[in-house]
Amino acid sequence: MKVRTTLVGALTSVMVGAIAAAAAAQTPAAKPPPTPAQAITATFTSLNQRILQMAEDWPEAKYGFRLDEKANPPVRSFGEVLVHIMAGNIYAAKRGRGETAQWDEVDPKTLNGKAAIVAAYKKSMDDAVASLKAMPPESFQKTLAPWLSVIEHNAEHYGQLIAYYRANGVVPPASRK
Image 1 (tube, rainbow, N blue to C red):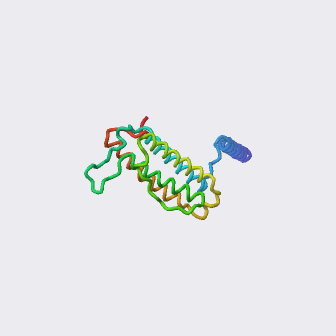
Image 2: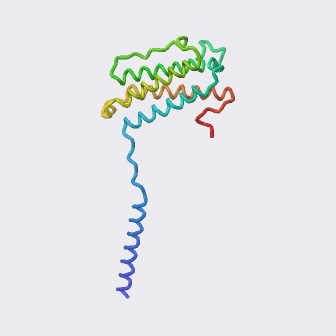
Image 3: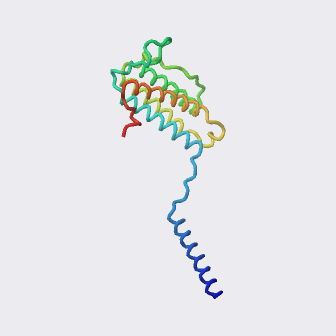
C-alpha cells in the first residue's frame, strides 16, 4: 500500500509540475516596465496627439469661444489655449536640444485662423517629439526636466479644452465611441 501511495504522490507531483510548466509556457513573459525615457516620450506624444485631434476637430467658427465672456481678465479662447500649449512645446523642444530657452508666449494674433493654428501646433509637437527622441536615454536618469512640467502644463490645458467641448454640448474626440 505504501508503494502505491508513494507512486500516486509522485505521479501527482509530476502532473502538477507538467501543468504548471505548460501554463508558464503559454503565459507570455511579463513585459518590463518602461524606462523613464520611454514613459516620458509615450506620455508626451499621446497627450499632444489628443490635443492635436481636438484642434483639428473643433469648428473654425468656434475658435474664438471663451468659457466665460465676462471674466476679468478674460479667459483664453479655444484657439488661444492651443497657442498657449504650443508655447510649452516650443520651450521643451529647445531645452531638449540643449538650447538655453525661456518659456515665451506666442502671440495668437500672429496665427490667422484654424488652419494656421493647427499647422503651427503640429509643427511644435513634431519638433518637441523629435527633440525628445534624440535625447540620450540616460539623460532621463539625471532629470525629467523640462518634459515633466510641460506634460503637466499640457494636461491641465487639455482638461480645459474638454470643458470647452462640454460647454458647447460636444463630446471630445477621445470620449467618442
